[in-house]
Length: 363
Image (cartoon, rainbow, N blue to C red; front, top):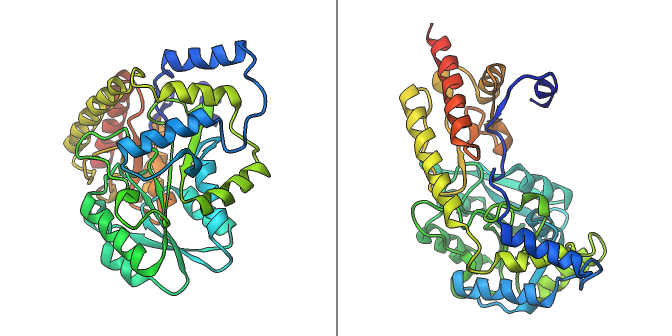
């Protein structure tokens, strides 16, 4: 795709996992003020106290977690937070259960830590397969990774599913790493944090950040919340690697958490785009998918085209639309991931090009 763009070919990117909106103005202004007033030096490795407290307050009020600022570390991106959690807890030979389809970085992080990934394919409609999860348990199971809303499916786990996982974790003393980065991008249903269930305080590691909700992907700002023992280990990992999140970016994050920061207009626009592209894909009658309730992805099965996801992605790219093969997300070779984090104008043109591809297959 990059090579084609470099040659001047117009490519509509439906493979990108980031909002196409600008970072809110008040957030940008806060970073500028911080730099102008000299807030450009080292901070405590765990993050500035006022941001840690603001995150803890957000988690207490919105997510119903029993946390204080001492339970929070501010990280340079939520990916870094996930990496710290895995490195702190997963030892050589430990098994980590990952419901799939899932973001590929989870698998790579576990492998880097010396752990073994046990993938649990979701049931029809991308619901979590609790019985399969139970069957995958062993005396080496150390962690379960949960991502809701999910990348790449947009599936939002319900309270019943998450409670079932929480009960399993408590019964077998297994850690749960909960990636909640798409928490604010929900169109139907409600977000439930698995750490809100009773008895999970010592077992759940909650990771979130500012990238998706506030269109701050390039700012690299995330956070991790857990019991003090885990947070102590995470802090040491950060002290001896990244050191800290950028000082002025932390001030921007503090501003982002204020109620006046606009998030709802972006979510409303994403819902409009979702409805449009889902309706158009249905009309083509070769895409089987569940309408996503969150995030900004669709993960259709394209087997009716007679091609696997990889080949179909190549065919779409030839017509100027970039998407992502499903194989990367845990062996879903007949699927592709489509991101609707693009303008309506581009989505309409992308749909037109996709229709051309589908019609050519019928000829």
